[in-house]
Length: 285
Image 1 (cartoon, rainbow, N blue to C red):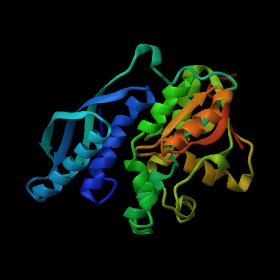
Image 2 (cartoon, rainbow, N blue to C red):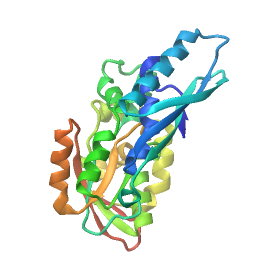
Image 3 (cartoon, rainbow, N blue to C red):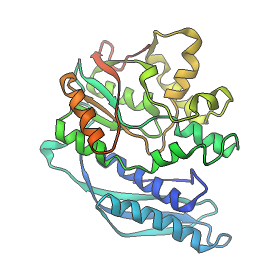
Image 4 (cartoon, rainbow, N blue to C red):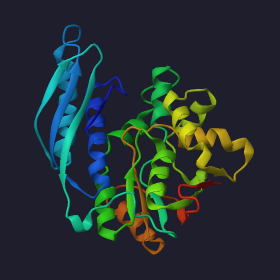
């Protein structure tokens, strides 16, 4: 189950993004979504119901796109709108993917750019227009289905979806549970358009600082000192409906990237898994 407050003004897009985000955990495990229950909080006394209808329609369309069905839901009157889904999925136990199987030498591939929290903060601060944020909005509304299907096709060691805990936070979770470390080239981590510019203007969500505070002691910075803080805060940015971070044998990485491309999706080789002493250590360069 996952739900949150609006990240965009358009209610239909909000519904799509919230639904895509809710199904990401299933895709990260290699599961196919089956059913979804709406969870919506809405101020019916002060906003027209057609706004709520548009939110639900956005979620419905995204669930149908995923090949699942909406089987009901629950609504609560609330001064602040919130929406998401409780989802179920199906996976063959032999194909189940979790975040604890990363192996030394594995390649690390990320399937969506990062920076949605920064872009959303900039939109709210009226530092960029919705049109300027179009790339990030489309990315958040995109399902992780192609990444999951390609993942099962090639076979991977571990995977996690990248959401509110940020790229660094979810990577750290994977490393700690797998008892390994990682080397990441921060310049190879894809960013949504405008992210660096917005960081330089201070458009940084509070969650990014909290995420960075949690993981900073596990990071060994090997890059240029003048790039350090901006790079760290971007990689600690809380994501909404982010991509999958996939660990897989290095010899399978190119096939996975080509398979993603054939499905109309993308992937970026951002680093590799290293021996973990101590587990969870992240070398950034």
